[in-house]
Length: 74
Image (tube, rainbow, N blue to C red; front, side, top):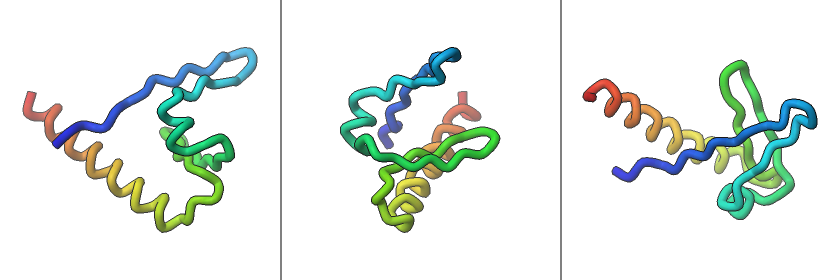
């Protein structure tokens, strides 16, 4: 299985602005919605049906579980 790509996103503490890498911008565009909780933020196109957002999140969750399993092996 190929691991998903990870991006580091830095936020300017004074301006509270973040640089979104080109690859992310090209994939999800400029009109976004964000759903935060205490540990993470889900960012997706504002016109994306929630069923598609949920399916994408399920795929990410599977990849995270796979990464955890690999960490336990090493």
